[in-house]
Image 1: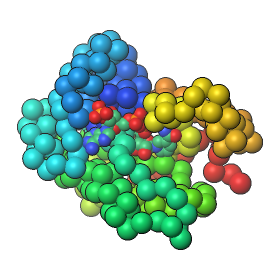
Image 2 (image 1 turned 90 degrees about the vertical axis):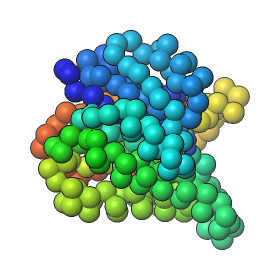
Image 3 (image 1 turned 45 degrees about the vertical axis):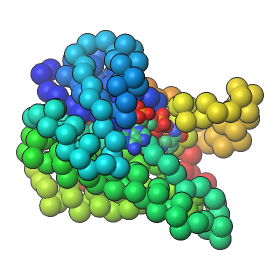
Length: 236
Ligand SMILES: NC(=O)c1ccc[n+]([C@@H]2O[C@H](COP(=O)([O-])OP(=O)(O)OC[C@H]3O[C@@H](n4cnc5c(N)ncnc54)[C@H](OP(=O)(O)O)[C@@H]3O)[C@@H](O)[C@H]2O)c1
């Protein structure tokens, strides 16, 4: 496999797992992280043909410089995170919601637009959103809005930008470093409470998301699709 995949947010969690999986599958992989230190740490955990460059997706000049360094490539996976706006709708603060949009929504927008001059015209883009946009979980209106906005944009992009394929991966709760601020007991309780009664009965692993990203990149007949990888957690 000589195709190149760019993984935005490839230094941790699902992005790191995606880079590891694609690298094992013999793609050439380019990861981003906000600092050289996180990139170097991630590269030490990825076997195969992988490089990385700094990128902060809230900064358009950083985004432009990243894609200049990458050059031509075949597929883009947007897995990065950012500050989120949790809390009930009644208490949601406009500045917090604006920051959340500035980070994940406008960040993904800036990266995707900058990528268009470099990505293969019939390559593919995968946006990682989150089950919140379609699950009606109280306390997640802000997160749902950001993820839902990406989803809405992506469907139209799939027609406008064809033959470039545009797909969405919607993970449920996945055990990534995002939850490392909790003790292991707190984390176990939290995961059990939120995922214990889902059909699969547990939270996801970053590798399970990575496999799904790989499928969306590989399958040339899939575009404008949402792939739910959530252990059935959305089925209430
Ligand atoms: N974990 C879950 O349960 C869950 C559930 C549903 C959806 N999601 C979504 O899935 C995606 C991956 O989540 P995760 O838990 O794997 O995240 P994570 O472990 O927190 O990883 C975040 C990645 O995003 C990068 N990043 C953060 N801010 C950035 C910025 N301003 N510019 C560029 N890169 C930035 C980080 O890079 P550096 O730190 O190296 O800078 C890191 O590589 C996110 O979009 C998240 O919203 C997560």
